[in-house]
Amino acid sequence: MEASSRAATAEVRKRLDELTRAPSGVLEKAKDRLTGHPRAVSGPELLALADELFAVARLLDGQLTLRRALSDPAGKPDERAALAGRLFGGKLSDAALDLVETVARQRWSRPIDLVDAFTTLATEASLDAADVRGELDGVEDELFRFGRIVGGDRELARILGDRKAAAAGKGALLDRLLSGRVSPVTEQLLRNVLTGPHAGSAENAIERLSDVASRRRGQSVARVTTAVELTPAQEQRLIEVLGRIYGRTIGLQVTVDPSVLGGLVVQVGDEVIDGSIAHRLEAAGRRLAG
Image (cartoon, rainbow, N blue to C red; front, top):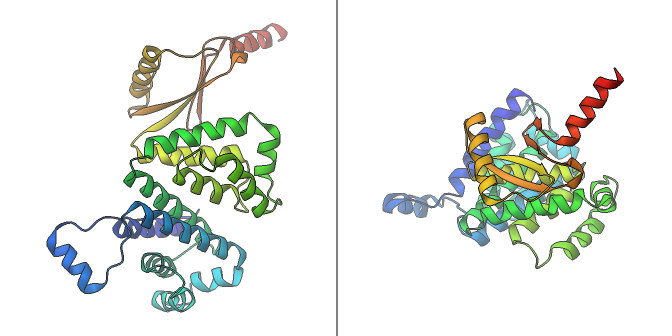
């Protein structure tokens, strides 16, 4: 995403924060009543807002003409916002319509960036709901566990990552896998992201969601692969060591994989620290062959 779209996304995320923050104090509440300031602050309201924003992202993804009209640099910001109001008025909640108009007022590098912006807004609204419901930790854990399930099942990963597969079919499959087993927030995020036309690798898409949830908790994620279960004391020691290395709070997502033989493989963002015995043996073999 180029600079103008990054700046635009930052602006609309700031507006989302304003719309999902409960009014503080008598004066702000009175102002809201006078101005009709739309807010979505309860768990159900935030889940509904996220659904609306995901729906707008899907609509724009399939409508190039509409994307161009709402991001046309030749038009004035208020004119684009007025167009958004005419098109979406009466079809969306006040908070969702406010965000659509806010998006239309921004300057975007490319029309397709509107789709990414609404997907980002929807994801944040869904995680706001998890926060309000006191489920943010659980949602992150559920996303990680489902990612491990997908990563361990080639056929499931292939189906969910197939860009040409029907969204309805993927949705029905996800219903069978998730319904009643995970938080409504986790189900909402996975259903909308994995049935989107640009999901790509299902495992990577889920990993990105997990990273966003972790950042909302003020942490970076370290994905740790180990040959045997770590004890609580070992996990705590690893958290402390990684915290000193990276200078920030680190949360662990641990996967047991006997093929590493011993030691650990640790991934933080794009950086991989491979201290496994398997890696050392492979390196030694390359040196002998050379």
